[in-house]
Length: 309
Image 1 (cartoon, helix red, strand yellow):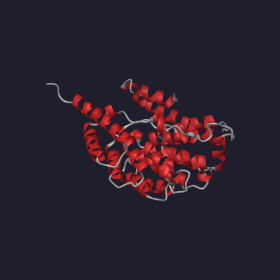
Image 2 (tube, helix red, strand yellow):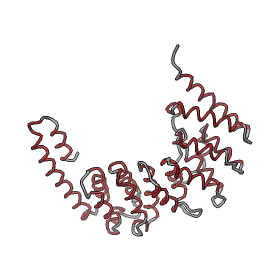
Image 3 (cartoon, helix red, strand yellow):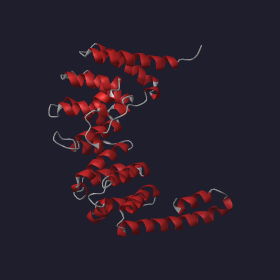
Image 4 (cartoon, one colour):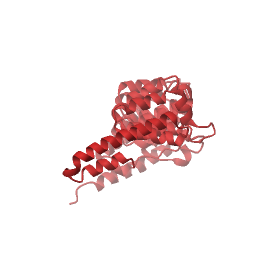
């Protein structure tokens, strides 16, 4: 634990020592910041660089995030952070730092991520951009600026499109929902991609905004039967062995569905309403059977929440 954190805790122990503790805290914190900056400028140890970069994300010091941002668009620093080409954590470190940025400095995270993504130095390595896109899902209250940036990274021939769909699903804004819908309905994207995108919605499928997205897609008249069935299946079922049997890399790791028992009652009622719509659609017998099972489960959860007589 950093010494300045200990000093803050000590400060709360009693009013008599409070003034001294604040002074000691300031000195200790300044010392820790100077130490972190020294490491970032001089160390060649990727693990040490990651550790201090993450500390900057949470330290709360004025200028800390600006300093980190400057380092992350410096080619020499990025080379030291990445380590050797054989290092399995070469780009994972970047994601861990950027995720920490979103959690430790949420008010500065969005602007910083966009700045890094638009930097030629940072974007020179595709793996770094993949990790940045993955980190964007942790941004709180994403604005249209972030959605526009992600939109620019999700062209039909882009290797990052699948990651963008994942992030848009987690951001759950009207704009991010529209970005997903637009691509589902666009002929420029391959149907094989769209089948995978359905599974990317699994972790957030019980969120009201995502249920609305499903409803919009289901009622949009998707012409491809496989996609139409997969949409309904991923909203109401979980077919791990069928959907994830051909995974080839970590970016396509199996998605786990949210816990339906944790869904809000209003969301569950929305699911029942959408299931009524789906039952009238042109779906396979297998999909409709799964839909019936899911419907019974949802009704059972809602019944269990009724006041006991």
